[in-house]
Length: 575
Image (cartoon, rainbow, N blue to C red; front, side, top):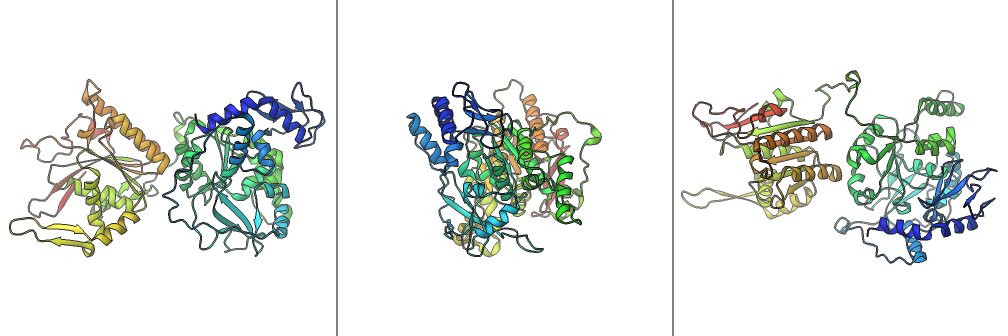
C-alpha cells in the first residue's frame, strides 16, 4: 500500500476524533459535538459554518471556503509534513516505513547550504507586513532574516532536509538589481519551495513566486508550493515527478505575462490535462490591482494578477475564491478556426540540420514536424541522421530519445561520441596492409563527454518491447517526466507489428499516432524507413519506401540520403 493510501486510511480511522481534537485545541466557538459544526476560527462569523466533512476527513468553512484537517492542525503546531504524518500513524496504530527520495546519485557531490542562524527578523517582519504577510505566516513558512537583513527562503525536501537557500532584499527592489539570489558556494536544485509542508491527499496549488506562496498561506490555503526558478525553467517537473504523481488535482497559478502563460501551457501538457486546473483572475480583479497601486503612485500602471497582488488589492477571501473556482483545462478538440494561433515559420522553434546548404532551403528541423529519413544501405543514412537529429539537437540544448532496432546502446554511443570528440581527441590506429584504419576516442575525452552529456540522451532498450504502443508510451513518458523534445526511431522495420493481421494498416496507424504525438507535444520526431530494393528504373525515389504506400504522404518531411559515387564522402539529401 502506498504512502497516500496509508494516510487516507489513517484519516478514516481517526475521523470524528480528529474533529473533536481540532475543535478543542482551536477553541472553536459554538461547537456542536453532535453535528460537528462550529464557528470558523479563521474569520469572524456569528453563524456556524465550519463543518466537519466525514467523507474527506477535514473541516470545510462554507463562509470563507477554507479546508482544515488533522495534518494541517499538526503542521500549524510546527511539525513538518513527514512528522505530522508520523504522528497520525502513531495515533491510529498504522505501521509504515518511509522510503528515501531515490536521488542519491543526484546529491553525490552536492554542496549543501549552511543554515542561517540569525534570530533577529525585525526588518523582514516590517517589510512583509507591507506585503500583507503576517508574523504567523512567516513562522509557519520558517522565514528567516540573514545578517544583512535579507529575507531567507529555505528549500527543503519532503523529509525536511535543507537543499538550497534563496534570498530577497527586505525592501523595494531597485532597477537593475537582482530580485532574488541563491546562497553562495552552495549547490542548488529545482525542488519545489514548500514541498515539506504538503498533504499529498489534498489538491496541490503551484504558484510562480515565493511571495505568492506566502500570500496563499496568509489567505488560508496551506497546500501550496512555488517553483524554484523563473517561469521559463520547467526543470522542477522532472525533479519532483514522483511527488507530483501523488495528486489527483493540481492547480496552477502563474503570472499573466508571456513566460507565466508559457509555463502554464507546458506544465499542463506534461503533468496531465485531466488533473490540472488553472487560476484565471478576471479584468475586475486586474482593475482593482491597478487602482490599488495608483493609490501608492498615481503614475503606476500595474495589473499583474499574482497571488500577492490579489492579497494586497482584493483581500484574503478573493484568493480562496480564485483557487476554489480554478478552471478545468478545456478539451482542445473543437475550436473556431479564426481563434487559432497565428503561425509564422519565422517564429517557430528550429534546430539546424547540421548541413548549411540544406538549412537554406528548409529552415532546419522544425518543431512539431515528423520527418522520415530513407536511403539505400551503405549510402550514409545513419551517419546523417545521427549528425542531424541527435548531435545537432543535443548541441542546441535539447534532450534526445533514441530507439534503434539495428544497433545496441554501446554502438549508438560510439557513433555519437566520435564526431563530438573531434580530431584532437581521437587516436588513429594503423591495422596493417589491406586493413581499414581504426579510430578510438581518448579516455580523457570519453570520460569528460560521459559526464557532460549525462541525462541528455536516452536509449530505449529494444530487447524489452518493440511493439508500437510500447514505443509511443515510452516516448510520452520521457517527454512528460524528462522534458525530452527530440525523438529518433531507427527504423520502421524493427517495430513489432506481429499482433496485427494487416501489417500495412498497422504501420499506417503507427505513423498517424506519431503525427499526433509530434503535433500535440511540439516535438522533433525522426523516423528512418528503408526503401524497397532498386529495380534499375527508380534508383533513388524517396516515395519508393518499404511498407505501407501511405508513408511518404503521411509525414511532414521526407528526406532521401544518397552518397555521391564519384566523391565517396559527399552526401546528397533530397526532400
